[in-house]
Length: 575
Image (cartoon, rainbow, N blue to C red):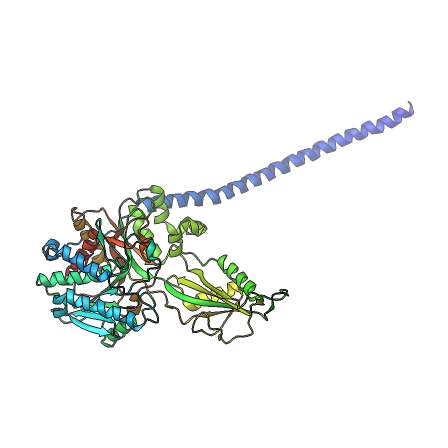
């Protein structure tokens, strides 16, 4: 036996031993793999069950909740007296001429109006008294703070908890025109052309004011005596602050201890083609309005000569702060407040199954919708959150001097449920600013903190109001308004009074109105303008070529006539 054999034998024997060992280990590994695979399979089944079961549960819930959505629309509410028997007392040609006369008086409001500008409002008042002699004779006229008006139409029954009065609001003033050359018709010409009255104030808001007076005049001519007392309040400075008009009127009413069944002010219109997928007009009733505040953000630095621009620069610091604020978003909410009421009202009426599912189950889809960029739907995005915008920017005194301070005005619109102070604290944290004392205006450097590089303060010169409370869309006052809108819309368009060719939905008003001055006097404050608007029409308000159709103006008169008649029939028990 050679050495090779000696060597080979142990190798062969060794190989056999390794084979046996490998087989045994392999079997053990197979068993372990099977057990591991079983565990993985079991785990996968559990994971899938954690995913699939909730998924199908949610899908099942969505299908069920969507299929059970029911309409929230109230039926049409016809007045106890046939509407046409009252409005037949309106000479429409004469009414249009009176409205045109109102437009021709340029009641532009300014914070520091001259004596001549104030006299314009006196001319307007004289015109009203001359054009409505019966209203002047039968109603009490109170002149408030020289230029504002408070009218009272005494009801036949005493005021008590079961027969509260109602209040209609409007304002006499309008915003400036801007460049009159851009208008197709003279902005204060009151021209009637091609079925429209043209001019500043036709939509905002001499139309409402004149329609209210025309409706009272028509009822007086029909020898109608309301059961409820009716007030009409016409402020003169709504466009600049409301502090000298509506606020003063409200003080008088409050001293008299008055409360109102409901209050109607300017607000949202009847829109056509403005809600995706809805092909019928929607009458939007503002059940709340956003708060408004102006904040001043101010920055400071040591200044210096522009030839050595290596230190701090107040403008740079302010720009950085504004840039940070622009990237900061407030909390978005769809599932509470006016927006939730809006979506739950529209959901059952939407023709799309997908949209009914999303709108009717907004709590489930709220987070996803909140991720959408505001630019996708700017108007709707503004309804769901507090917003802010930089509106003025001041800094620097000379071309070769580094500025020592710079300031910017931030206009904030605050959603219901938040507060001015809370928003100020939120912004201060977002931009790293110190909150300081309130200032008289955005340009007042005396804010009490010379040391802080970035400060934020509330500008007392602005129109600072907290968000309003939310009026219930389930109250009988809301249902009365909704039913009246439905009836009058059908009447104006010559259709059956039970027509469902219009939807009525609660909403949130983004702008500020005089109604905030009366917030303590009624739980039912509604902001609504009975005018049909199409895409592009809202831009005419405060813009160029403001106008209203004669048909819409006549419809506004019909609306207030019907509302007065229906309000008299409301049950005695107040809500």
